[in-house]
Length: 93
Image 1 (cartoon, rainbow, N blue to C red):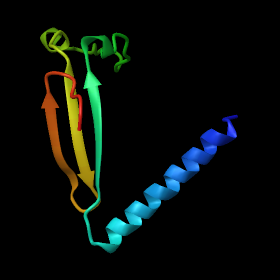
Image 2: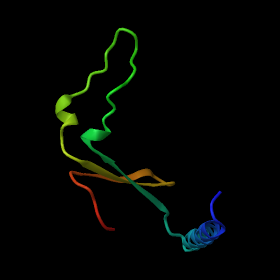
Image 3: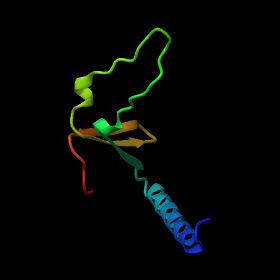
Image 4: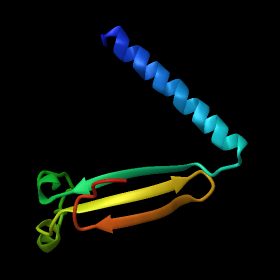
């Protein structure tokens, strides 16, 4: 069970976010959702299952490439809006 001050803070932030979303809708602004994911050779799944008689094949050159960061934005209206792939971690806004 989380402490009550943590739950109160969460509830405050949740209400604040709902108000901001409602305001953006009233203003006719487009809502965009952004997320990021990072890949490294350490994130490679080394154990996998395949169809009987078929082995999984992985391009070893691609596994040992450097770090990759992917940033994606989507909207309700268009789905995928934009994505960028970077060769390093992205720090900042």
